[in-house]
Amino acid sequence: MSPAEQVVQPADSTGASTFVASFPMFDFDELQPAHDALWSVIADELRSRGIDAPVGLTRPEVPLSRHWRHPDLLFSQTCGFPYAAYYRPHLSLIGAFHYALPADDGPGYYRSLLVARSADRRVAADPSATDVRAFSGAAVAINNTDSLSGCVSLGVTLLDCGVDHVGDVVVTGAHADSLSEMQAGRVDLAIIDALTFALLSDVRPSAVEGVTVIGSGPRIPCTPLVTGQPHLVERIRAALLSALTRLTVEAPEVLRLLRIRSFVEHSDNEYLPTIPMGERASELMPVAEE
Image (tube, helix red, strand yellow):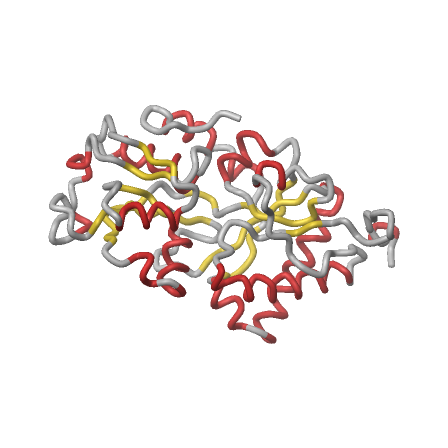
């Protein structure tokens, strides 16, 4: 093993590794076994490169803003806007997954989907031809005030469509909950990231029943894979690439379930443009400032 690959092992008083890893962004109950299987292979590849990766994933109960500042965070996935706006001093970018989605916006990019209730009288017979301006003043749902896919994208999309005001803004905490609020008739409009919509369609189709896509948001980089260990970025990237290659042969169903096609070595330059997007979106949306 070369000096650059010496074993890296933060340890507690018992000598056990204290590194933590998570996949908190799309870890629906139905997909947890697939994420566990994905991590098992990544962790194996990390250990072969001298990094004492944890055996299992952490499913954080603390606020993610605290989890992403854990001093021994080895691997996680965050959101593009808060990463660019205020997590970069604490996290280092590994890259992003390229996902298998109905619309291919290029490796490592995707869009959010603007959705309304199928029965809404403002939705045209051809949903893609719906005049979004008809939803001016409508109640909208956002998952979080710092979300690129669920808040910033909504503000930018509505402004681009000529909507200059909205009604109540309901903060639901999750894209799936935004869909539930819409199905219950408590909101009229929401924007759901394309991966969440596709995954829910796969494993929980009831979550998208009665919901129609009437447009799409701006092209944005996929959710960043990050680490709190900047000196390990290159080794983590190499381990991740090897893991995906192995899974393609050994367990392709894991990648299929998670809709992962490949890994893209994004840089900060892909995410920095989300900061002015957030500033623009704040004209309509309560975009968070840390």
